[in-house]
Picture 1 (cartoon, protein in one colour):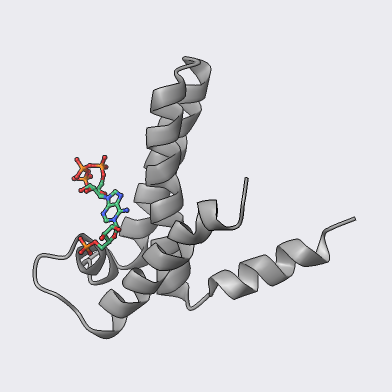
Picture 2 (tube, helix red, strand yellow; picture 1 turned 30 degrees about the vertical axis):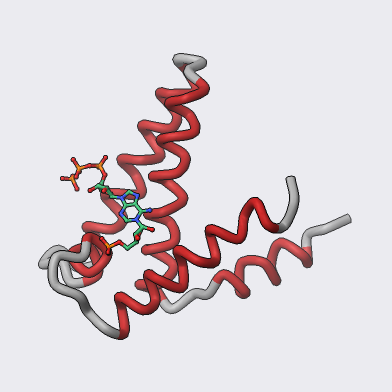
Length: 99
Ligand SMILES: N=c1c2ncn([C@@H]3O[C@H](COP(=O)(O)OP(=O)(O)OP(=O)(O)O)[C@@H](O)[C@H]3O)c2ncn1[C@@H]1O[C@H](COP(=O)(O)O)[C@@H](O)[C@H]1O
């Protein structure tokens, strides 16, 4: 996998941060960030998408694994944005673990 393949994660994260700073009517990201349940709504989505990803793997359904993992990664990005953690923070941590 090349760096370019995953640059979409950075791009989507930037949009999520922009939604946080400049709320937009009808935005799904804003609906999560401003939810009456607070961070719990985002955590519910992360848990739900993780479960759906696990089921897709159990079913050995590659298309579904790709679809559900994309949902999971997206909701993880929203969770990071909501908690003030950046993708740089994650990449720094992962670099430290290289051996
Ligand atoms: N990558 C995504 C993305 N992936 C999934 N989703 C949404 O995540 C939602 C939840 O998926 P579910 O399968 O659980 O569907 P659901 O039935 O709506 O579930 P509930 O929320 O009702 O429980 C769906 O409404 C999807 O549209 C996404 N919504 C937005 N993005 C990215 O975020 C950007 C900003 O989006 P807005 O904030 O909507 O402008 C977009 O340009 C995209 O790049």
